[in-house]
Image (cartoon, rainbow, N blue to C red; front, side, top):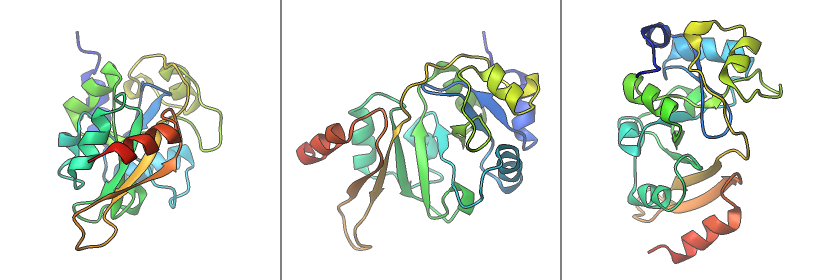
Length: 202
């Protein structure tokens, strides 16, 4: 039985926001367009100079938005789904709140989150709380703290724990065929594990 109701989809399509479960903490999702981002940033009280990442069902789903080099797929296959967020080159410059020319993408692993993005497409993947406020672990409490109603909630409780590890994948030069991988934030995947993987990558 689907848990993604017509009300949730209509809310997103009307540039609203939705609280949904992830493998760590509740996420706050909206479509990646200006009006929806305006609403999300106002709700979170988040500074406009702090970009949010995008949650997707697969790297394939992100292809219209970002360049997907082979190394991106290879490294995601080497670690648990949802444990890494990759910063990739945008196909064309996006809203600065999505990173502009460099966009952070996280392949989601929670079944409910996957159902949502498979139905609606890529949505933002930022924590469902006011900036600087301690997050809740269940989506109903998180939505209530943000003043959101039932049409803004995909119900679920999250396990918490460390956030995803953020990696930047980019070419060192425009004419280069190789890519470099930089660790931007150590999270659930330790720095040493990523560095070991990179040393062994061919």
